[in-house]
Length: 179
Image 1 (cartoon, rainbow, N blue to C red):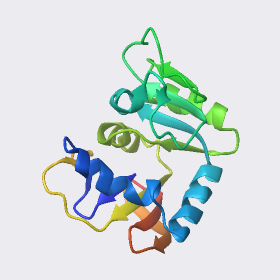
Image 2 (image 1 turned 90 degrees about the vertical axis):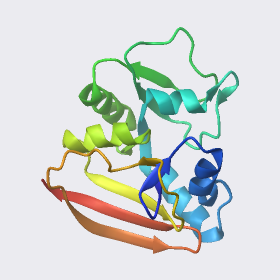
Image 3 (image 1 turned 120 degrees about the vertical axis):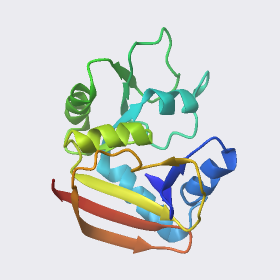
Image 4 (image 1 turned 60 degrees about the horizontal axis):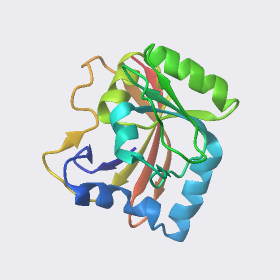
């Protein structure tokens, strides 16, 4: 999850999205290496419906760097889905079902919870997150959507496992070690 220094992961401003993801779509050599590591590690994606709708188009899923199975949390299944090489399965049975299905599709790869603050918060609160990968962008964005704003105040303990610093972004990895 790309995040500003003040915890913002998205918002209504298109520039916000561009600022947070520029490191990914116009990477330096070190960031390109890190992106390759991510692509190798991730075996399936769970995402929220809004994230899907923001990226879906008639021609496919816009700028999708992961042509792997995606499991979209939703209250209903749309009549049509985005075209392209990425498979989208709409899961209406809840987050546990989405993670279970994604785990089966991922084989030995990581299940990435990709889409939206609410989606990540629900998975954290349910104890379904083993690791957090935060891509901290050195910018302050103010009052938009924060990643951890409404996480249940239950104590969640994290252990740093990796840090990769580049001029455009600092990649932080944490293991969830306790609640």
